[in-house]
Image (cartoon, rainbow, N blue to C red; front, side):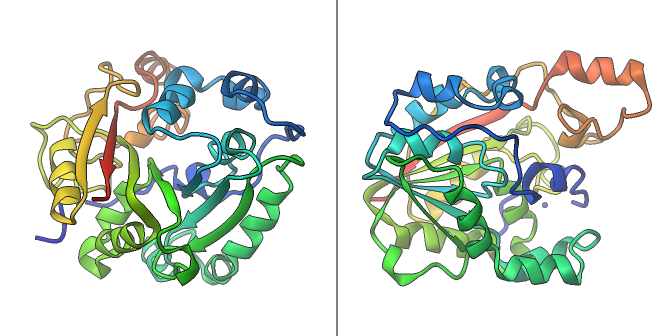
Length: 290
């Protein structure tokens, strides 16, 4: 069964992954330790450390200076801006976007001009990310899943999917996009290379149909099963991005929570309840290419 977990809403996607613009932060012109790099990030990014735990996540994935790391759906560079100075001049940060033909399936905002822009995304994102670099930061490049350059084969140490799997899975039936993405992952990684996943996590007891990705959530057990079926070894999980307050029902979607507030923009009482929950409960998983 190709499709692991799938249903219809992409609320908040545009704010989550579409833009490559972000608050300005001065590039670091020297290699610095991770704490110093995190302190140099924009205030808006730092405000979310309590929910996103970038230091603990980077450490759990085993990312070290000098490595080559793929940041899937990097948007405005939340992780890329941290990785560039941290990996240093011997490292590489590679942005990866969804395939253009998958973007067509979103409808709505994915109009003709949007799709035309996506065709040149690897170039435009690389140009933007180059502007974030300091003199001794990692190199930058980008590609779209399904169109990975052959020269990347066997060069990547860590391939990151941070809140990026649910859309691959929701369109698995239409074009095997999750399966195809993992083919790129396997080809790109060195032997022993790591796949690092942070993903909105569904309660295991929720309906499988609800947890196919359209509502933002996937089940941890089924992600592990799918990854193992594609030949990756499960290394372990961490609760560093867990939020036990987020217990979605089969009527909920992840974009009801901060920062999207998809159901409470005009309802202060409901918004307060969403703020009390915080950002989503997230699985943090680590896999290895044999």
